[in-house]
Length: 612
Ligand code: F6R
Image (cartoon, rainbow, N blue to C red; front, side, top):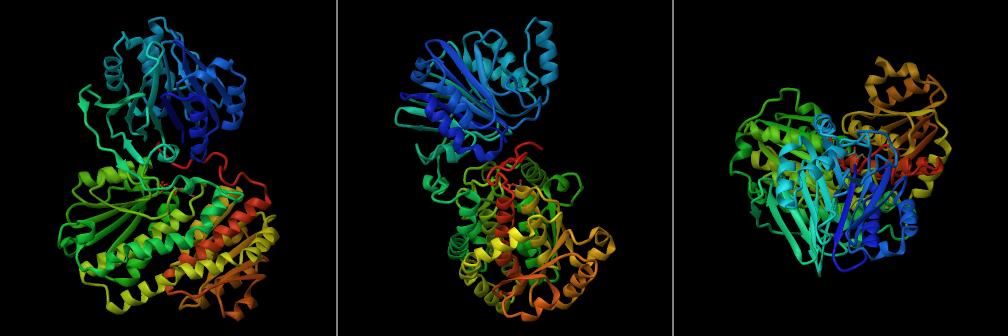
């Protein structure tokens, strides 16, 4: 979703803003713009297309624009109004007093527009944002705080707003409700951005604006206010991420780099968090002592890939404790399904960004029911981290590729450890299961290494099948979430039709689609369900579908059932998705690369989905 960058300080603003926008490109966008404040005037440039095109336009601006010491920039992911230069941000009020950028949706924009139009103010864009811009100019009488306070009260919906007033050249104003915004001060300059990765080269001490908070940014520091205008003291949060972590290095794509980082993510998570299972109390999470003995219902809630991570966790929990009542919902459904809650329920919310609107809303609903809540996120200081009393941080580091890879691995490894701690607190985790699964997890990094070493084999397979009309990914039990994640990766980055099915379901309908142009990719780990899955594979083969199998090393007879077999190391049964996913990420990556897709920034997608 939209990316914002603001700067006020002693250096040229344009370069800093363009660089900050480029760092947030992965959020997903279709147009970009910048406004620079100079000698009491605000000059702007906007393009449909990439930040690189905006940079070329900035090069053509009058040379004095390079002298501007403050400015704001934006990458727009269109919601209201088409993808046009006019609709791109920044927007300027009719009287030119206010210029602003916005991430979110102003739900009462139509009413505001009707009211201001009746007062003679002309609107020129199709956006909801322009309503906020014109309204602020209408409210402004020389006192920025007073006007911002009135604006914040008048707007309905979600917004991160970053604003310049023409007559206040050394100031930038910000307001946040529902959409993320992070602020920083360092060495005579203040900054704001949608995403902390854009600010890490300046400082690691960041101020994450809370709901209903505003900020005034000046070269000598930042001041924070509530929406009612009262001052607020705010503590910065230290983010230990390295800015080099958000560099592509020698890799062609961030996604490829992030796939390769997975052994480290696994190692770090397991080394940091096995403490979770080494104590038999809720102490590490600071959960109420005895909580897990009282809880008789566990709910996992998330969206997209994070949801598939929770399905992996649900399966692990069920496999280790057959008695426990455990569910995994997508957040947008959890909210409207009338799920139960209260003191006997634990809900675990998973969001790598910590900003996904549906997951945040679901967590708020659960809290309102008195449900015990734990959040798992990859971003310290994100909204879900700040709003949830008990948070566990996954150890993936910044993920730039839009398609989640290493954050999924970070989530499933942390979830597996959390599940074991919770069951231990409940008294239902057997010592043998604990030793078996932890032991299995410890060798995962080297297994993933060996899969990465087979990249050329996976690449050849991807090239061979890249002209397939579509794919079915099938498997049973622990392989079903893996199939879902594999299908999603291929949809996202290769734009190929791909479906995931529990293998036993194929004959109940989808098998009708099969012919020699649709490839079936089946997962057949060497376990109790192997033969049943292979029967389902044979049913597909009989309908002429080309078959690829993902099987365990040593399973030579798998070749009798398939056109091609990809072998991966053996793991404990519950852990097959941990290794399988890496092979499937590489497969999707190379199919997309063969088809020359925009792998790091797939069309229509946003990294952080901040609207419901
Ligand atoms: C897929 C992907 C998305 C996200 C989903 C939830 O590759 O990245 O499906 O998993 O939008 O995002 P978070 O985890 O940030 O809540």
